[in-house]
Image (cartoon, rainbow, N blue to C red; front, side):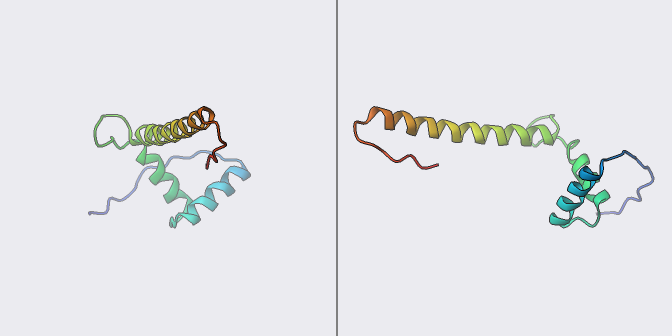
Length: 93
């Protein structure tokens, strides 16, 4: 992949707590710098998803929420089954 020189600058302010949190997560993810981490994550929001024109960030959120809903549905089904049985049933989380 060809390297494209970055010539434009965007600047925004963070509180000390926000900066420290961003620095910590960027280090934990192996980013070269806080700027690289922030840029990569911001630009990822602009990439279209594989099956739609929606930005990838929205698709990722929908996929995560769908998984959480499916897990909650499984828990509710186990609870309903447990309520219908006369003997106690252990419901694992």
